[in-house]
Image (cartoon, rainbow over all chains, first blue to last red; front, side, top):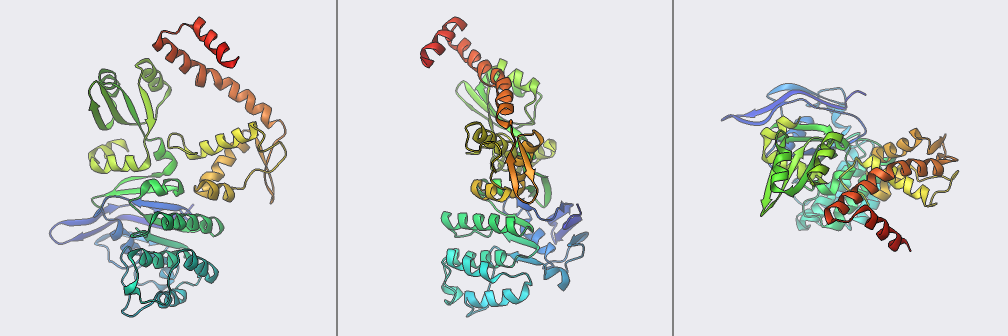
Length: 297
Length: 118
């Protein structure tokens, strides 16, 4: 399958040696939900801004829908970028934003738009500056979903949204994605909430790609081991450990790697118990200690 | 219903297998579609599809073009057979390990099982 988004050694550097994005090469397949994860300042927004032609790269190359996105109306009409803190012109109401968005996105669906407005209880005729943070986010979500753009970027679209509204977003995203498959790139810190929606995950840290893998593969990439300190210590010797904790005579460790038959036998013999590591926990461990992430690849 | 341990698509396949075993989906009836599963379980449709296809590969489900997925005749027997083979490894071995830890002899264990099932 040809990638719908492809970057080759893409970099964005600023004066004083700031490397917002450094040598990023990724290929995202079409009609999948991809996640872009990483800590604040990791470069997630920079990457999305480059891919939507809002920034110019320092070096490297990129293709969105087969073409360079910068000042490319053909590509940009097929993409939708929902930014974390989108600014709107003074005096604009939600209905003004939606009217503009409707003209920008040829695949716009008005039925879906109406349904989303109702579900998010979005007041469309009130001035945007009078809306709550959550209602502001809801505007972005309505635009992002109703646009049905073949390539849709959501950059932390949930700020200020309560748990109910976030679940609404995830449910609508899944339902509409199932009916109208398209490429979604979602950046979020609420990894546990979206883990099951994802097919592919890119984690960046300090501008570089740490992980680029299918979500299923990541689910088995690490596991927690717990038991007596001496048994845990013996077991982890020679294995890749990303985190370790002790409490009295007990210890637990987060270990990289699948549990093969030999490891299973060793665990059972040493009376150690294992538990799965969530995607969120894995990302937290790896972005806290990036040198370990490199080793885990 | 779902946890992080195994690949999600495998968990989907196991869940559907359970439903076939307990008669929720009798043989020659339809199972939920990819999109129905995805929305109900709140998972990616591709993952749901992978789970269904795992059961197609095992001959538990079969596809009817344009209609959906159906439980194959003999699916239940095949599942019982496969689960029985896994029973020793998944249930009896861990039970024996725990028993040894507690100083319960195999003889006492047999007695406990008889008591419990009486």
